[in-house]
Length: 365
Image (cartoon, rainbow, N blue to C red; front, side, top):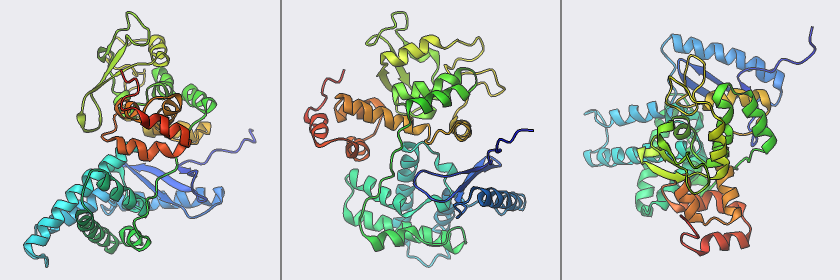
């Protein structure tokens, strides 16, 4: 009988938290919440009880604590004739709610998550701060942002009244002032990438390394077909290009592949039945979004990051190599260079910052 401790399921400890967290998918919806304990054994026990509770609520039709559901509920209420708000106020709130949904969706995409999986409890004060900074970066006036925050506060108040959250994060944000709080970026080590890759089946074995070599988002690379790769007949850097179609906002973009990415492609066997590069022999064929799959592998291999952090790693490394901030922005597909600057310049020295910002394209091809 093995003395090796069995790894607990459905619990993890984020790098920026002292507590263990629960992560479980029920009926296609991922639930994440803190277990409020620093003990692994206690966390495993609490997780089991909480999963049973969540499944019971799901069976009773009571479980739908997603942020998007709360937003849609308030939006629909604004259409009701019984609403106490004036017609003009309802119109203004609905406009703000649409902007909140769009901005939070962009934020979720940029951190490698899906707004459909975003639970109300995950909309924290730092997320509200991120919303404000993104609205600022898009050139919106302070008065418009304040109107948006009023609607946002009423949205979270409504969600709080339903018992989905304990505190209103917008009120907490307004108390602490306009202070930006960006999440720390965890840069995976080469050794951890190798271990994660080795755990994945079939062609997914190459997936983490390809993300590391391209800086692509998980979904846009998972759904990349061979037909959108050109130039492999002469597989050298400068000749091979990838067309990315399953991008954020469906904005097609082309990138010139670096030699590291080209060499990976040359190792991947092709399928007679699947058009995708990262196919495999399981019943799934390919994964539209393998984030959850690799999260499980990460728990097994000690990969203390997310697949999306490989995108951050790529961007920071290219900036340190000498790519301009504009070149990185265009290559990884940020809608604005301001987003690239906010996320990555904080990891550079003063000299590096001056260099990457000095020239508009800095050799961009």
